[in-house]
Amino acid sequence: MNVDPLERFHAVIPAGGVGTRLWPLSRASAPKFLHDLTGTGSTLIRATFDRLVPLASNRIMVITGLAHRGAVVSQLPELSEFDIVLEPAPRDSGAAIGLAAAILWHRDPNIIMGSFAADQVIGHEAAFFEAVKEAVHAAAQGKIVTIGIHPNHPSTGFGYIQTGEDLGIREAPNARSVLKFVEKPDEEIARQYLASGGFLWNAGMFVAPVGLLLSHLRENHPALHDGLMEIARAWNSDTREVVMADIWPTLPKISIDYAVAEPAAVAGDVAVVPGVFDWDDVGDFAAIGRLHRASAEEGTISLGHTDSRVYADRATGVVYSDGPRVIALVGIEDVVVVDVADALLVTTKAHAQKVKNTVEQLKADGATEVL
Image 1: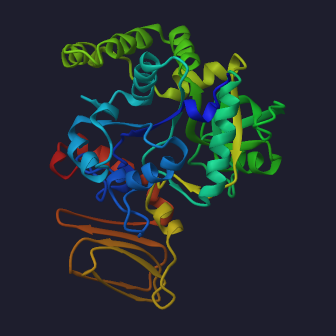
Image 2 (image 1 turned 135 degrees about the vertical axis):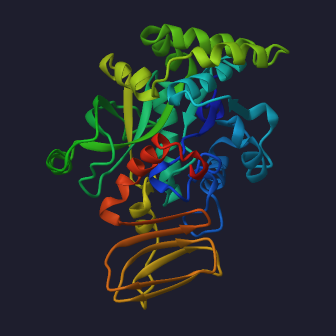
């Protein structure tokens, strides 16, 4: 008897990265997925977990840094020890997602895994559910499936997916082949992509049979594959920590896009299901501005501590404050102000992506106490 592919589906939540463009709110000790950036009272990782429960029930695994174990367990108390994977140090998404696939493969080689980042905001969840279900059915036909987002502006901050022909899968009527993944473009190229209608944003969501994902990893990066499989073999044994400590630092740092998705697309093994839901990766403070409606009276978006006091006079922008200090904005447009105990950021929405450069400079100067 054939098993419904949805019953084979396991969700994986990679919860890594610092979110340097959201400094000084997001830090190494408290990255952005641990924060409520939407004003809903739910952190990003909590919202991601809750979104996946209707699809995967209790078949959800979280991959995060060892340093974040306490915070993740506190925010997701229903997550079992069996389903939290702790990285001793960041090795990029190829190692993180690859390890999840290897562990799940050892549990059951027939599992279909879906990877959904902990720090994304998604609206119209019914449309998200339908896209994931189509992706699972397409994956069951032997495809690595990505969910691409219909672009609504010529973004230079996202990678793109060039779509091909309809795959003719009955349970996944919107699934198409992927011709190629393309890097973040300049604005002129992004406008061409938008006008053509044949490109989607790459949201980094992947759904795939674990065996297929691992076979492409073995073919393209055998050292990474073999190291991850060795860790996975020891995962449920007394030697797990020793093997992890020996192998993990030796693994190459590479993203899952470069390690698996791009070469698999060249081989014709990648499909895409368009996502017609609202999506944002909350990549900078301008993104936070998009997620909130400004006060009609003030023209500003005020976030943070309930005691914060923000006053605006013919000014617009985003303000985050974690204390009662008065912040007054006068005659300034699209400003970003982030005021926390040990740092103050002042920039504009147009320059929000460049906050990362400041973090890199602070690191180079040895100012790690504020990172």
